[in-house]
Picture 1: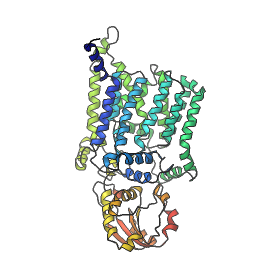
Picture 2 (picture 1 turned 180 degrees about the vertical axis):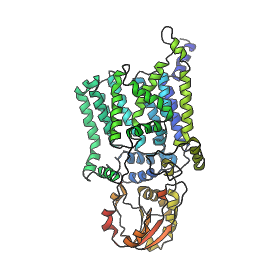
Picture 3 (picture 1 turned 90 degrees about the vertical axis):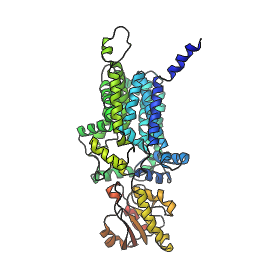
Length: 526
């Protein structure tokens, strides 16, 4: 064989569908690491604290995110870019997994490319992969299960249900909503020709594996009287759960996935219920059932985001087949549609790029506010925080260092004997987490709080003789009910922070009740 015969083969390896998907995955990874122009996200500060208190469960989440943060800080440190390496990598894997699903559904190179571009530019994925949380992991478990299901539908061994069970178990240890999706898949199997899979023992063994992996968190919740359910009940009682009509909920799915992915996932959903893709209709049923459940349960609009790569994959295949070139025999229809592929790609890239500043910290805050005015996009109506000039995913990255600095200046000016007995109390986990993360360089003690899992970590050894309180706006209650004397520590007025994080900081001296005794009443789950 001559060298000229070998060269085209080697060249082709770099232009295959999987290769193109890998390039786009790398591009997403680099995008997330390059644009680190804002500060730590509020939830990240809380997750740092959770990682210092590893457990099988937390009030508001399973344990996976705390483990992820612990792993990240051990490997890469606590720098801003260091803690964002793993979520950026998870985002890249999401693109790779989408490409694998396209191939399993029968898609060729263009379909893989199209689906990867759609996932790359989807606003919700750019947003959740920009910081460390359970949300960046969740699509990997959902779509990992889908990939294994497709393998079995296409003839692979039913023993893959064991791997399905492992992924589902890890998903339950990440976020409980995968249970709804798994139920959607089972119902989808019942409603399609693949109901025969329910007769194999492997699916039940997979279920047992998922239950075994999930059991430690289940036991943690059970032995503590179901903190997560208490949290959800409090949210509903306070009127903070999402109240969207079915139409509004579906419209917000279109906004979250953005114009680049919109044509693909909507087309994919329709195609999964056509005769051509009947073999894979279980995926369509799984989506519809999960969507219905979240609407009925008033789930947040982004809860469904892990399901979209499979719909995008199906839609990409539809467009690929519709515009297919090189089919045997004359193909005037394909020739007439030759312009569709480049036009569709151009549309996705242009609109995806236009929305990038809304999901990545590309622009400075003043330029970003001007950008929002130009494109006319504001935070969705389901958010309750539109007083801020920035949407929450950005506003929650500002003000924490300034708050900690002001607490530190006041705390370190106190007499040494008073400092030793002074607690720093945050009204929410963001404030407490900021003190815990930024405070050590100033010599600040660990914060206490009644919010979420901080309540379980208790008041430590503090009695309430001296408490610096962050985030309390009812100073009259402090003076008349809780404290013998109240001193203003500092005013907070960061222009980009959330309004409720710009409340004053107070110093309470001589609490009228012992902090150790009153602690059970300070529980704030919601």
